[in-house]
Length: 187
Image: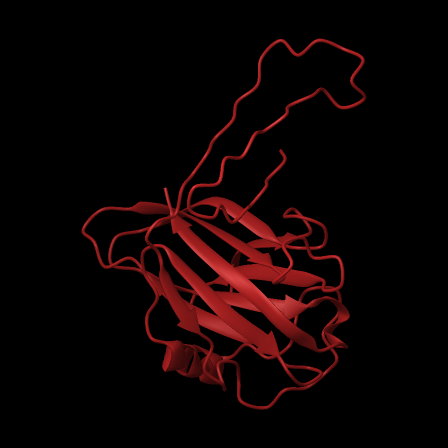
């Protein structure tokens, strides 16, 4: 699956050109989903929203700063719900970010989660994305299924009245990320 995010400015027209990989065979069928986010809520990350003590040592995208304190600190950004664009950073090496995402409705909802850099594709940053329960158990994890080295989780079902914790990490837990965005959309 290929996923593309693009900010469309007022009055702008965008054309999508779809070709088969290699442009040398017929496509029997394909599916394209286009989602417009307007309006969406913008939020700015509030620190600390991890365990409060950034430390290196996480391997791959696993991270190592999610615990009960991270769950409590995640609400520093408020309980996020609906379509939200969060502007964030990992200003110190070892920083990891945790956001509380809730479904305040009486029915399950499906959400998509995506990290990206301010320039779109993650060419200079490499993120990991986890959806965890309050105990820290990973319900879903993703690395590099977004644009470039960005992460993307699609069609995660969030039960009615449930809160999960979106945990964003830096690959290898050894770099700063001056700026990134986390996009949360409901389907």
